[in-house]
Every structure is written in C-alpha cells, then in structure tokens.
Image (cartoon, rainbow over all chains, first blue to last red; front, side, top):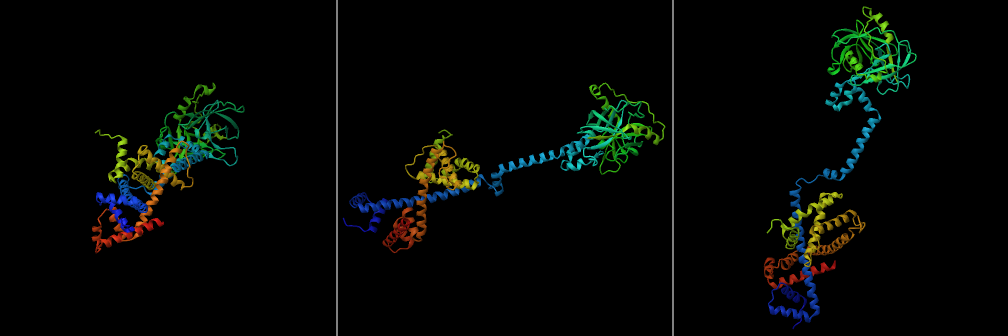
Length: 366
Length: 189
C-alpha cells in the first residue's frame, strides 16, 4: 500500500465518514488505519473536530430557535412588558408599604399628641348637625370645624393654670347652675364667681354632650342658699321677632347684650335651639337668654362664623329634658325645683338686670 | 390513548423533541417550565428580563446535556431545570463571590450536583463559542465551503459549481486548505 499524504488521507477519511465508500473500500480504510497508528490518530482527531463543528452549529441553531420562541412567548404572555416603574414597584413595594405604615402612624400619633382630636371633638359635639356637614366636606375638615366658633374664652393669659372662662346661671335656689357642656369638658375643677367677686367651688352633676348642656352644683361652705330666684323658665317656644337680651362674661365684668329672636331653629336646622341676633363673644357661652318679661327662654351656646349676627341659644325645652334625665343618685337628695314666680315682670330693663345679675356667674374652668 | 398524559411522558417527549430540534417541543418546554422559574427569579430581586436570560441559559444547559447521547434524566425535568436555574441565579446575584454560599445545609448536595452540571456546561459552552469564533474568523469563501461540505453534507461537485471552480481537484485543495486554517485558529486559542 502506498503511503498517502495528509490531504489525500483527510479526503479519504471524509469519504469514509460520509459513507460514500463501497463495502470493500471501507474495509480497506479501516485496515489502513489499523496499520498506521499515526494516521489513525489523525483520523480520530479529525472526526472529533468535525463532531464539535456539527454540534456547535446545531447548538447555535437551537439557541436561535430558543430566542425566537422566547420572544413569541413573551409577546403572547406579556403583551405589555412591565415598565421600569412597575418593576421598580415590584421590587420596592415592601419598602413602600413599611414607609407608608410609618407615615400613617406618625401622622395620626402627631395629631393625637397635639390634641387635634380633642379640639375636633369639642367643636363637633356642639351640634349634631355639624358632624353631618363634615362628612360631606371631609377634605376641608379644618374649615368645617371652624364653621362654629364656640363662645368661650380660650386660654386666658393672666393665669397659666386657668384654661377657660364662660358664663353660667342659677336654676334653683339650692345651688344648681347650668352652663354649656363644651365649657367644662376636660375640666379638673370648676369655680363660679358672681359679680361681687365671691367665688364658689362647683361639682359637675350631669352633662349632656348632645344638647351641649352641663348641670353644676355649688359645693362650697361659703355658699348660702338663697331665698328665691327672680326669673322663671318659659317652657313653650318663643316667637320669631321677640325682643331678647342676655348677660354674660366675655370679660371679667358682666356685659349686657340685646337683640331679637331671629329664627326658631338653630345651626343647621337644630330644632332644640334658636337663632338670635345678639352680639356675643367668646365667654358668653352658657349665659341666660331672657325675653322682655324676664323669662329664661334659652342658653347662649355659640355663633356661626362668617355670618353676621347669627348666634345660637339652646331652648329651655332642652334644659328641661336634660334636668328630667338626671339620675336620682346624682342629685344627693337635693331636688331640682324650678322657680315659678316671676319677680321681674313689669320691671324696667335696668331693674331686671339689677335683680338677676346676682344669679349669673362667671364659670372658671381649671 | 388517554387524553391526560402523565408528567413523565411529557418530560421524555420534550427531551426527544429537543434532541431532534423540534420547535414545538421548545415551545412546550417554555410554557410548562418557564413560569415557576420566572417567579423564583422575580421573587428574589430579579426582573422579567433577567428571568428570561436565566431560563434560556438553563435550557442551554439542558440542551448540552441532551446532545450527549448517554444522557438520562435522573429526576423530573422540572426539578432539574429548577435546580439549575436556582444555581445560576445565585451565581448571578453573588457574581461568583462565594462559590458555595448556602441558604441551608439540606440542599447542599442538590446544589453541588447542579454546580457540577453547570461547570461541565461552561466548559462545553466555551468550546462551542471558540468553534463559532474560529468559523467566523475564517472569512469567506472558506466558511461557506466548509459549512456546505461538512454540515450540509453537499457533494464536492455542487460546491465546485457554486463557487465556480474549474475542476473538482481545485475545490478539494481549497477545502483542505480551509480546513487546515480552521483547525489552526481553533487549536491555537
């Protein structure tokens, strides 16, 4: 057998691998390889090389197919690929949730700590109708809260310890006094001072937040029962246009205010209150509203901000209902007996005032 | 034939399909096995694109395993793919900082097996990439001649005609030279 050069051998090998040789030639090739170990090694190397080449090609084909399929799959299963924002959100939603939770907690705890809810409650408890208004205009809670301005002296500057001042008046000769609920909310102690400067300690006997009324009882050794109270309580509703007046303590001295009954309902249609046209100021809360005959027809409670001359007074009817609902235990045997003899009738206004101002107190809440 | 094929049947169908280069099998593979792996990647600080990359890499590992004729799947296909993907994703995340960083001792053995498969795969990949680079670096007409002859299996006469060689001997010589050059480039690297 002649010796072959490398090129000729490779060609022969290719033919062998491509199975183009006849049976006889195949055998001849195998025998040749067996006889020439060098050529056999070359053949093995060549064969391995070709296999690698084929595999590499098949692999790149496969990879291309795979990529096509991946693209198709992506299109059908994810027609709108997640945007950067969404994928960012996917990654950071836990962090965002924690941050939001912290923010919510800190906002509400700050509001709570700064007493926001106390104020909210105070302003909304005056009128049940106000709460309904707030729900419709939730966004502007603060503006709505300010819709009603309470008539109590907030934060008197003279004494650090004194928080609020307002007005109250006697309803029975044994020492029961009425004022507004919003005046005495959160009170540690309540003191009553008459125009002579005598001060008495008072207990809170009963409160009615819905009607914004509080019943106090003077509990002080220096207080002596009085013989009688000059005014009576008019239980029927008064008529529009009625001439009315009040005495209150918007400052440390008693202040007289006069006007007329301008509507038979109060703020937002409250049927247990009147709208009155009297100039009232913080501190007038809890003051008596009298008609020209000297009957108590209501208790000053608030005014509407932004509307001129719209003050409100709680009707006597609400006071009667409140007095009737006091549990017997709270009274300690001192019954509420209302006066029914009017001593002011037919007196001039100045004389009326002289007589009744002994029974009107400045309420100091500590 | 029952309508519901058993999972094992589906697995072997897919593997056979891939071996034969059947696109339908690849599609099926994608539909069945991509979602859980995508979830795994996305839930572990990955994006959808990264999930795609990891899955394709995993399929390439599977493909290289399959193209070894002696390959027998020792576990469920899903298990195999999941283990490989997990390993690849972990490597991607740590960028190879810690080779055997483990979440727990229990899956140590499983990870080790996956690691071996991946290393084996990387060697093969490197080999193939080298071959592709060599072919690309060969230039025309050598590349096409070799491709037509060895991969397409065309006859020398057809090649001779295609490239306008005057006789088959010239073509043969040309082909031989090309092959030698390719080998030189391939083995040199």
